[in-house]
Image 1 (cartoon, rainbow, N blue to C red):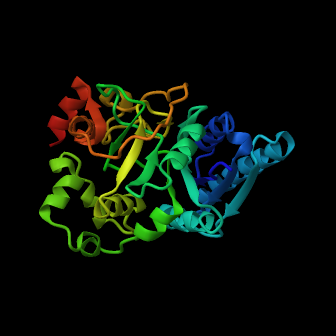
Image 2 (image 1 turned 90 degrees about the vertical axis):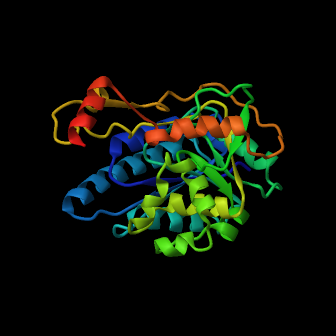
Length: 310
């Protein structure tokens, strides 16, 4: 049976609708069980948006029951605001009570028609290879030479991803403090996690709560694990350009910057055949370039504004 999908939503009805419509268009959707974890609001304004999202979810639920476009759809409505970290971690834990694998989506991840096929093929092919801890449907890299169908990297991408129960339960820990997260790691480890400083992800350890994804990335590093990627992205994050102003300037964001990896998902199927999991220096060099400045590329106007504001 195909892996279940866990979708985490909050207060963005339009993005949630687009994410669900793309998921329902997947070739394996009729064989797939979907769990939707709907977080609660923080105040009356956010609760109004949450109620709008939940109304949409129940409309889709009724459609699924009528059309059998999914194997099953389960909606979990949080009674209060769990915040993203708690919602995701507890949701993953719940799904793993009944399933051996999980595919995780958030409410702004639009998938290609063959995304579920790729993820399930990867779970099957690498089920018994503990070195592969994470499967991503998203890739930051636009090209790899030579161009295989998949590649490996220790870098963890959290947009349309999945893992196995045994890997998650053995290695994941939600750290509460920066010192706890970095205990036992040498400077060499920190440099590796931040790709020599061009990707300063460890600053997120100062946030409360600490984001789940940096905890999972550290867990993969500690276990010397690898992540499997498709050669072409099978997902697109439609929530990147969420604002129309730039540091108080009434200027559309796209006039200032764009994301180098922001491209439509590949519509074709990507085959998954077994390859020996290993780091590739060429891939890691390309990944370092892609991660520089968080993948943001500035226009001449953006470069000027950054200069004026620094």
